[in-house]
Image 1 (cartoon, rainbow, N blue to C red):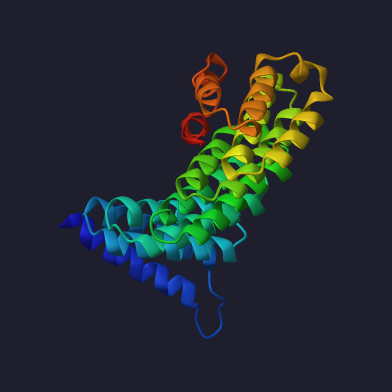
Image 2 (image 1 turned 135 degrees about the vertical axis):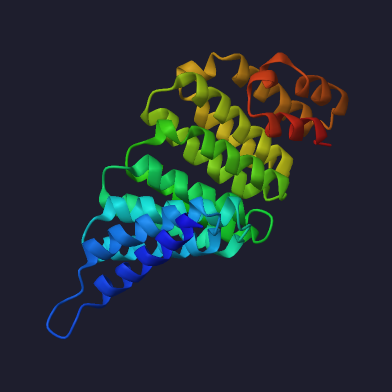
Length: 273
């Protein structure tokens, strides 16, 4: 097809520009432009493997010519092709991770960097739990260190759900603790109160009622939490747990206060015995 011929010609021109000659250096900006155009033409011709390859080469060429944002954009395009058309998990993860690093080093797109890292993590979920959690941690760290916490709230919740699903309850406590710190920083009192209740429930699910009591005391220093319905229900839950009063505990686990917290934590509360 015409698109395929065009793509092949562009790829040859890119190769030539990237090579340089006896007396000339590689012209990376020209090579990047040709590879990018070749990728678009290969995509039109439905030759996704070649398109992915050309986007990856364009990205590296843009890195050589210090056009970091364009490099990030191209490797993201490669990742999308690997994910949607080629179902190539390894390349999807590696390209999204690279896109994240490039967006971050460009400096103007921390949210985009975190989003790319999260996409890589999602791809890892079903195959490698530890790697998925490492990549999620990278995404959360970007939100935290770039002072963009308010945009990461849903990611904190997603990681919590994933950890509960994998029965890694104590790590879920840690993630909720980090979310609480973000909520304090941005003064989101409503989310902070719900998050604190989640921490107490997770500690009870883990079987650490002593730590749950300590947390309740610590959170109670904050007047807005101490006066909340969540604090009251948390206190009653700890008492019922300590007394081995399953009936009261189950009743509390169904109370209105739990209707507004993270769903996976509310479900876990109903299973505590």
